[in-house]
Length: 181
Image (tube, rainbow, N blue to C red; front, side, top):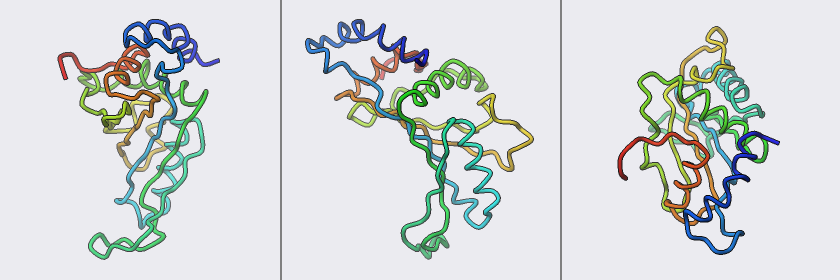
């Protein structure tokens, strides 16, 4: 069992008390984590798209998929079927392992890191934030990447409010910025 999942199971009573929940089935939990990279800058370079896909696969520990454009947009010089991004959805053990590595290893490696912003919640308890580069993950080799790119990480929870989602993520060790919000 993943280290973070064991921590979550041990923290469930504490989360229940903090949120004032009576029914144990209402305690928020993690559902999935989505890692996505918008790669519009690389849509004409198949090697670069493949490199981004390989990098995200290495980071996630699960095969990433290339996202293609559904419609042509002349203003952006995009044709239907062109690759425009890379995405992977993590659930179960992979999700807990990735979040554990993100919180305990990768985020502390960010230069001048003061925490992730508190305003990334969407109103339903889900949290979004972006990373500027993929090099903060120790499994990514500097020599193997063709271009530095960022990524968006979405943490989907079973929480029904932003407050419940924040309590869950704080208890799991997500380093939010200090202060109110």
